[in-house]
Image 1 (cartoon, rainbow, N blue to C red):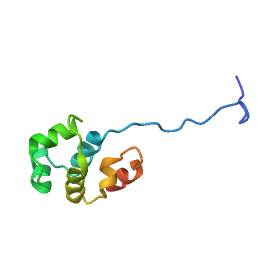
Image 2: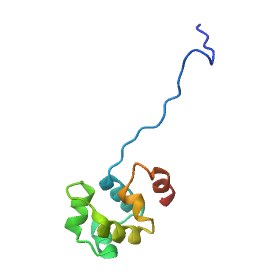
Image 3: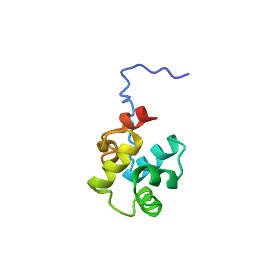
Image 4: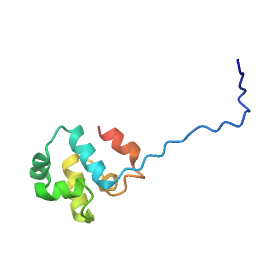
Length: 93
């Protein structure tokens, strides 16, 4: 049996998850149990554009980020900058 000491040069792993804006939109929508059409109705963005946003096929832009944020009840930065706002996304659930 091998014995390890805390000084055996082990470095704890740090979380490294890259989340796109589209993934954040989809996660928030699914956490609310909304369809794309329900989200579209709540934020004023067409269902086809919601799909394009969720698949990262179009840039979100400030206006769309604000519309989505208002519908979800979160700050627009959570949607626009998911790599910096991971904890806030979790709290929005």
